[in-house]
Amino acid sequence: MVLPNRILRIWMIPLVTCTQYFIQLKAPSTVEALLQSDDTVKAIHHLRPFVEKAFSFGSFEGFSGSFDSDVLARLRKNPLVEEITPDIVVKTCNKDARLGDRASVGISSRYESQHDAPRHLARLSSREALDGDTDSYQYHYPREYQGANVDVYVIDTGIQCDNIEFEGRCSFGKDFTGEGPGDNNGHGTHVSGIIGSKSYGVAKKINLIDVKALDRTGTGSLSSIISGIEFAVNHYKETNSSRKAIINLSIGAFRNSVLNRAVEVAFKSGLVLVVAAGNSNIDACATSPASAKYAITVGAIDDKDDKLAGFSNWGRCVNVLASGVRVISVNAKGMGPLMLSGTSMSTPSVTGLVGLLLESGISPEDVKQRLKEAATMGAVPRLSLMMRPITPNRIAYLPYGGIDHERYDPYHVDVDAGEPSTRYQSAATDNLGH
Image (cartoon, rainbow, N blue to C red; front, side):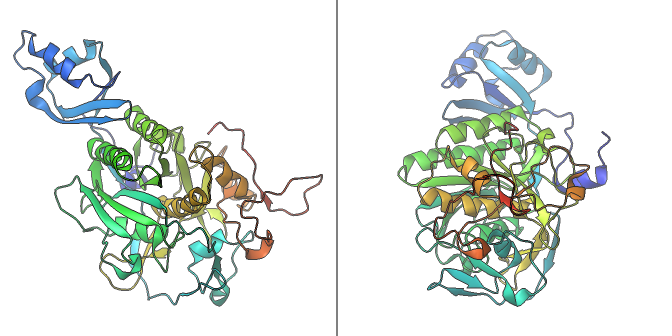
């Protein structure tokens, strides 16, 4: 398939010949052993002076740096080395930006409902497509489970944590860009607002942790993203092991096994990873972290007609779909809400939903399956998926209230006793192995 360069430039950069590399090792605690071994080799250049950063979390171990051909040749022959990959460029997965008017949003704690809710929230509460009556949009969410005992590590361009929309539930974790705390781009703040702000957020009480791995241009590297994952895993282990934790990755690049391996290790360390499918209208399995086996990969729909967004990646690696076109959320500049499109925007809706599921007692290992079971199946027009093979027709759904009236059974799944009674049904497993 010939990939259109114009689209690719929006969210990821092709690999180029370079001297910056990431080295993944086969076993933990072997970086120093490798360096000591290389110190004894007769060579013009030894490895140690060129190592810029070492990584270690769970069973993942590696390092990055700028290495010449002589050093790389030795590394390729070293039995401790699992893989050598260029330190690829990674970018955000948003499509456009526009300032909108301040939304009129009211929250009724008595009824666990948000009236005049943003469309992306209303779509989570409806089995049917949204109509054009903006005054009727409602978002129904559980009073008991709003994410207060869940932490989300937002690996992004930063978060403007002092925005009143976050109500003091946002804290600075780590900066890997050299820019310091805050968000000079706006992407990370917008994403975080969809996850857990008071007006635009799915999980109204969730805790947000700023892990800044992308700079003011929305660009980072494999090393900076893995640094962010490493921080999240180690911070989670060192601080609140009794709490549940999620990593939101609204970023993407071409498929990279080292990044996918980092996602796997983070998942096996107890965190849930929710990632963007990407915006290149290609098979998501050709990208990372969307192709990571242990990630929850989110594609985008346009909730005006429930069609798959024209930019959204697709295929069997996509687990669920959510609103990703003209989504309003928090503006890092503190003005009216910012409107953005992309799988960067659909991903945090699912992250917030996962936070509610985790707080209700569902385990990190089971949350992907429960998300699939609760989803609305068959709502995306088939014509929209005709040229996007093996894409699950599954829109994220929060089963509280709404038109289905599950009688306060938040994770009720209809059991088909014969012929389906409606076009829209709860989704079981897709048998796609992802």
